[in-house]
Each structure stands twice: as structure tokens, then as C-alpha cells.
Length: 585
Image 1 (cartoon, one colour):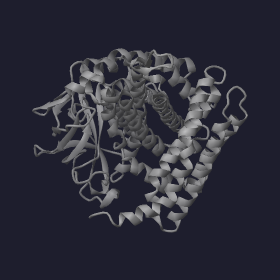
Image 2: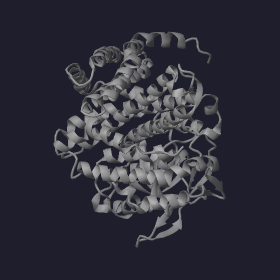
Image 3: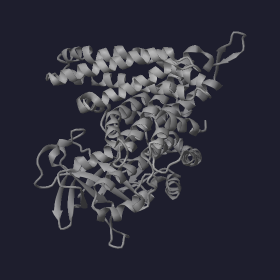
């Protein structure tokens, strides 16, 4: 089936549910008007439908290939990327001083949604480049900005993030890559693994952001610095010079995202060392890299929800066309009319919309939290709270929705030719990227729910409660049952949060962390339910009945389980630790 970018649905969620309309009214959206949003997203949808989606299946079959250190992407990808860059899609959030358009990140996140719905393997490259741009804009010297930002923003060059090493996965304290000072630059030696788009044939140059240690660096994460290492060195006049001593020495064979090259990168393999330039202060690399990583976490969450949308579309199409069984009058029945199939489809739709809303709301909070905006400190902390939820909940839901998509197809879903399996294979990695979802849950429990002694969490839960209160007074749609479920879920989250923070304060950190993942799931489920309820309220004058029905379905199917999930996060964590003692070692 062909892909359709449901732009109006995305605009509604961005403006009415996630709060861009409110941000605009508060003066926190720059000069981005509602018609600008519609024009940009409509054109993005057209580009995705015509240029990216047709390459999705062929790219999955063809893979990207490594030969003699050169990675070749599938047929048609280079032309598609050149058209993407020529259209200026990479410049939206870039600094205007370097050729960017200076538009809000929220708009970029919606574009991430569209690109990934059409072709997730292709869209991973722009996500990384946008993150590199953010890091350089925030931390690089003016000299580095002048050389690299215009090309990255124009899409002529692309960016990567180099953290992981063979001996050190998520434990960045174990990084061993070395950076030796030499005049105004450094020579890097080491190896990085799992580097998406570390080598490819789409752009003229690749700009690697690499974590490494200086000779006198302290041990642990306090001794990590960040370096810019270009594939090709740049001459004084801006032209490309000699090839740097950085090579792709392997491309992983993966479960999914086959056309996206996941590379092993060797720095200094030729012996001379890869020339790199320090970004920010020495031994402060994690601070600079986290600018890129926090951006990427919201974007990866969006990738999970986007693939869920593509899986949902295919499942809906198949269920409407597939005939199996009989109707009450004896006619062949489309499987969409079977109650259990309808339940699966509604689950797919509600989880996808819930995850999308959380990601969009997080992006709006990031924009409103930038310096110079009204109540910037409040919104920055709101973004801090929502980021681990956006990343983990949305990617977990992406996996669940894609799995349900296969189930809707039945046996045909397990056959590659139907296309349903690709979404499950592609989406599975997003819950691992940018800090596994368990790490996101730990971050939420250890750091985020306790921000300002719990005041940040309390303010957010109060906002969700206000949605429930509005639902009780709604006249056009019946949302009272949703309000009741939402009240119970919010109360359960508040109680569980207090209990988890008390355990940490009492030194029972392991007990609190054993319940972190079910707590994040419960929190995300609650936030998603509130946003679905808000969507029904906002749409009450047109389409409100359908949205209210979806909100009620979600309330009874998902929100009803939150108190049990929250209880598991607290009481059940003790059993995790007790049973873990018997695990074989």
C-alpha cells in the first residue's frame, strides 16, 4: 500500500494538544504562524510520499554495502538525499546567522515524524545531523561554527555522534579513545562502534562528534572531552582537503533499518591519528554531547511513534480489504468488523496518538524553555521531566504497535512480502538507541520527578488534572468516564512518585530503581490518556465524537491499569530484588 502523510492530524496534535497554539499566543513561537505550519508540513508530506516512501521497501531489501572502506547506499538514496537537501529541509532549526531558518524544534520533531513514517532508515541521517548542529551551536568556538555550521545546515555535509566503544556500552566512564594535543588541533586514536551513518555516499563530507580523553584527563566521566573530526579536512578557503585518518572498518548486519549503515569507525588506524578540534572546554565533553543526546532522545521517541503510525496505516488498510468469516446476513466480512481485530486496531491508533502527543508536547516545552522566552525556566524543567518519558514510552509503544500490526495481518504478517514485518524489525532498535529505555526510567526516578523538590512533577500533574476537570464539564462529548480513570491514574502516579523518592532518600536506591520501568510506563500511559482526552475536548466542534470514543477506549483499556502498574513500581520492586538473588551467575 502507498503511504499517506496525515498532515491535518499532525497539525491538530501540534497546535491544539501539544500546545504550539498556546506558545504562539504567549509569544514563544517566534514568527511561525499557523498557516506557515500548514504550508511547511503539507509540502513535507508531499515530499515524503513521493520521494522517500517509494524507497523504503527497496532499501530494506538492498541494504547499504561496505567495500574497501566505502559504503554505498541503495539505489535512489543519493538522489533522494540531494533533493531533500536542495529543498532546505535540513535548515529549519539552524541559526539564521549560518543559513538556518531559526524555526522552533517542535516543527522539526513533526518533520522527524513525517520522514520516519515514510522511510525510517533514511530519516536517521537527518536526525543525527540536526543533533550535531544543536551541539555546535551551543558549544563550539566561533571559528568552528563559521566553517562547519553553514555546510551542515545546508545538508551538504552530515553529522554523526560517536560515543560507544567495544569495551564500554552505556558506561561512558570506560571510554578509552585518546586525543593527543598537537598545535591548534588534536590527534585521535581509538575505535567507536554502532555509529549510524558513520560512512556513506550521500554527502560531500561527514562531521563526526567524538568523545575522547586528553592525556591528563581525570578518570571516569569527569575526564571526557568532545572533538569535531571531519572525514575530509577543510582548507582555509573552505574547500575539502585531504582524507582524515578515520575509516569505516565494518558495517553491522542488523535486525532492521538495513539501508542505514551502522558502522565501526577506526580513528588513527593509519598511525598518524585523526585530526580533531576541541568543542567546548577540556573534560567537559559530556555536557556538550548531552545537548546533542537530549535532542536525539526526543527525536528517537518520535521515530518510534512514527514507525507505529506507518504500521497502523498498513494494518488498517489490510483489515479493511481482507475478507474472512461472514457477517450476520451471510456476506463475506472484512476482518475490521471482527471485534477482536477492531480492538487491536483501536489499541494501535490510541497508543500511536498518545505517543505522538507526548513527543510533540516535549518539543514545545523545549522551545518555550529557550533563553529569552517568558517562563523559560519553568518550561526547561518541564522538558527535562518529559524527555525520558517521550523517548522510552514512545519507542516502547512503537514496538507494541508494530507487533500488533503483524498480528492483524495474521500469518501474512509473518511473511516479508506483505511489509508488516519490516516495521517491527525497524522500530525495535529505537528502545535501545540514545540510552536504553531502562536508563531513561532510571533518569526519571533518580533525577526528574524530584526536580525542585517535586514541584516540577506537581505542576505537570496539576495540568493533567485540569484536563480531567474540563472533561467532567464537557457538554458536546461524554468524557466523564475518561475523567474518572484519569483522576485515579494521576493519583496513583503522585503516590508512587512520593514512595519512590522516599526510598531514595532512605538509601534504598536499588529498590526504587527496580520499579523505575513500570513507573515510567504508568506515567507515560497517564500522560497519553490526558492528551487523548484533551484532543477530544479541542475537537468537540468537529470530529469530537470519534475522538471521545477513542479516549474512552484508551481510558478503559490502558488508564484502568495504571494504579496496578504504579503499585508494581513500588511494592513489586521488593520482589524483583528478592528473586534476583536466585538468578544464575
